[in-house]
Length: 123
Length: 485
Image (cartoon, rainbow over all chains, first blue to last red):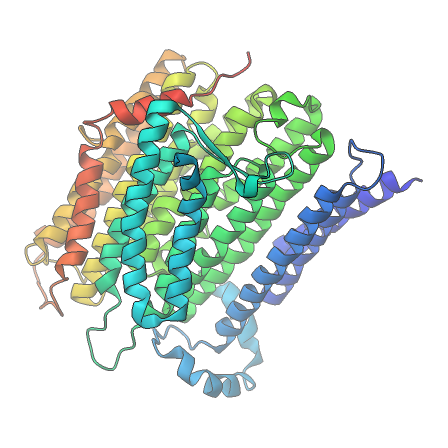
């Protein structure tokens, strides 16, 4: 079987795998990883779908994948920062000084691991 | 000369954001200066496009296919202009919105709101003037990040949860879009929106790519059944943030969807796909309005109303083939006037929160006469949602009705009429709580004039947007799609 078939199938499978986890898993961290797996699938597809210019590697998809990686790193960073806040924030408290007291809450968090799932229960 | 304005409308807010990050003290001034400059630049660009047609600019003198080409046609200029007007009013409003009422409160606006809002503005403009698929993907992500951060600005648990859900779904939507981009590039070797139609992409690949990109963009535009992230996100954001999210950010995704269907893949026009999008839009228009009727806070009513009003926009797809002119102008007119009206409504809700500390329907009971301008704003902008003449909403709905009836698809017309009746019900429900119920509580504070003024300006603009229909219609007509039979 040639690489022209294997890699696109692999890319599509990664995308599908990530999507399945995104839909099926409730935990926030799972979902963030799922989106990253989807992104890997798209990258593989971008690089390996049989293109028109068959005479040598095409730089444009490589540039797109590089940019895509940068975008996903930034977005994943934001998602993880928000996930930390979901765990750290007290229930229903509108707290405008959240920054200053975050350390205390991180301390509290170690006593309450179940909080990590709480994001999904909130309507 | 005007071509240089294309990179300028992206870079100017970016510069403003940089200043706002560097110095919290200068942040408000940077926002106001950006707004003033944007109004002038977009007006100049608008007159040029109106007189001479589409303006293009190759960034760094690198043209397509390798470089990034920026382009403003009539549709892009209308969206840039609406963004500038809404943005200027939101900016005026925000100069005071975040100012603490009580001494111990911290002014989060200076630290976080201004950089995020100006970044968002830059990304919006970039979406509107982009002319290639990958650039659109990057701009969509640039748009998502500040939008998500604005939702989380409040720092409360519910806000952060809403922001996180918005971010994850939005990323997944972007990846569906990117998957479509990969298929298009593999089949055509180009990303340019102009070159793809001439590149003879085979019909199956085109249909698959268009379907994948449409799914991704429908998530970002909050089309039913992907709408569930929107109401909590738009209700949790601070009022100026809600205004730009509901008025502009979801429209950017719809704008790309429309460009793809009408300009980039006119030959791949999927009749079943168009009917599915139209049907989902119809469900959104009715279901969103019904849920809006059952909400207990003003911001949630407005947010669900956005779900409904977005639905109307998607009625363009099934009507595009038989009545392209009316469907195109009607949907776009609805989009623009809804942007003005929805921003006005969220800003008015913010004034209520400022005055009462809450936007619950129980909290606003009986305060109508104490906040006359704020509720006048709500009523006038509400007329637009209902579609009363001479509002822009009337023109939009009228054109969509015309398109539905002239193409013999009367069922869409029924949806439009019922949706309008439901809209009048949820608008009146808020107004009757404010004016007909007793138990007026004392106000914390009268909202400052910048807030009531900015909201009222937007509401009045949306209400009279139907009176000067020639200019927008001329700009829209120049970009109306020509679909292959």
